[in-house]
Image 1 (cartoon, rainbow, N blue to C red):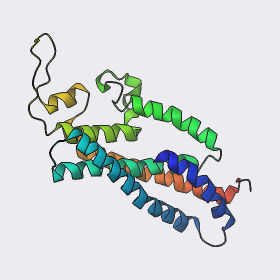
Image 2 (cartoon, rainbow, N blue to C red):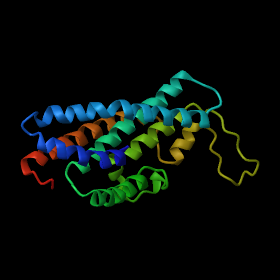
Image 3 (cartoon, rainbow, N blue to C red):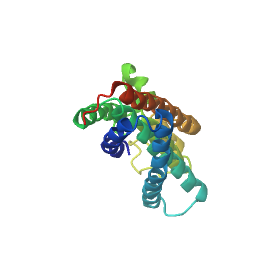
Image 4 (tube, rainbow, N blue to C red):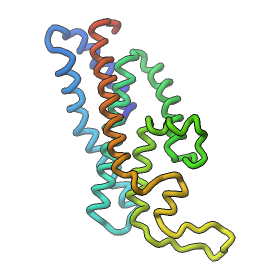
Length: 211
């Protein structure tokens, strides 16, 4: 979601700067954010349907709605992330270069490719700025918290995780953090929208867009 915004917003900002006498920055930014939400929610729901039925053989309305909440919150937060960066930087190549580095750090601290229990101390707090961390933990909680029994291997020399709670703990997640993750995504969305709004407003005051 973030990258689609990055490629769309700069072109729209050219018109926004030209029409500086028609409307103020606040209504423009609010309208832009609201216009992105329906498309973002639709894409998130499509992804959720594919994800849910790939992981579950039986349908549960509560579980499905929980997945939808996680993916939608993450997608909307991703939009804010893309807008926050692209509103301050004009060159798309520079934007994508910066985002690639940030995304790598966010993924490393999300627990997707790296066990959070072995995360270096200097990166431990960085995960709280990661959309991937909150989204991954929330989706993992929804998936694993409903699994109460896992068959252990016959070979007792191998470690055995007997239920979903133990699986979450093994990867550094906490089953009680679901709503904390959703609130974390909400706070990141608010913070990045504030940054994006300030960047959008600055476009008019500095007028550094080349026509």
